[in-house]
Image (cartoon, rainbow, N blue to C red; front, side, top):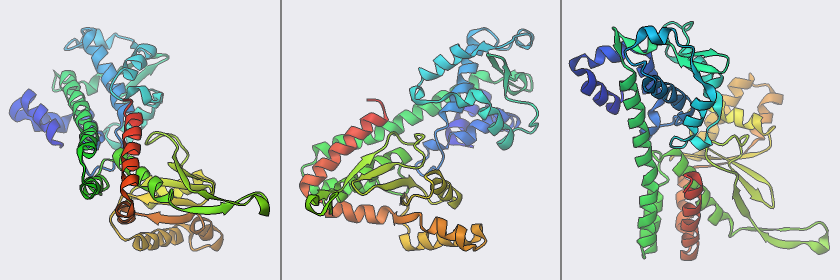
Length: 355
């Protein structure tokens, strides 16, 4: 049980807090879905599913259903449009898609938590939605207000986490010593870095590293000229970008930022881009050769060592870049490039967080 959830349950239910937790599938689900507040978390923020629950709980309380079982049993649901508009007004809600209201929430809840998978959390009737009454009570106690407190505290903690980079940016801009600037930037590319911050910093380092490299290119021998490599960020973190986080011009390289956990995800990224070569930027301090060896072993096992399948994935791995390479390339940059790097961090931080 996460500490902030335990604190809220203790405050509301005293010595009975563990019983409430163990008896509530919904609170246990939220405990699983709020891992993004941890520095080393590999989970997504899950705001879509969480805001779907939150909107229904807020509407439930605002419409006087709290501790009013009989009235709620007869209720047919809240209108989707009102719920969705409410979700979009929440912190980070303007970037969400409405998948939670399209049975994604029910499917995940049933697979991960529900003791009775046939009892859906989200009751859907046409364009109307409500939460199943059995998930709102524990031993005849209406726990909806406690769940609202848990969700609101989670969002509060996320906001504090998001401000971390803003505070570091202020420190960076105030520093005059470039060695100190590099040391502070290094701290932002650790294994425990928040995923979105890691992606922004890694992009800024790579962009300023590659800009010093060039190739000769032209349609004809007479038109050949020197062109420096340019790296572009495709959009926000976790966007539906088909497995492309950064793209390089003029040679056309794809970069995907990821973490070492499940190599199935790497293969999925390869499939998404139809096996066009990908450079994986991995949030790990492990040696890249060891990761590559593990990935190849996994591919061999997954493919049954069939050449046609094995080579298809082997040829898709263009390069592995880890925290080790990022730090090395950061420290090779001159003072002017460090200033440009900080400007890039500032720009993409503001885009990511809608500032």
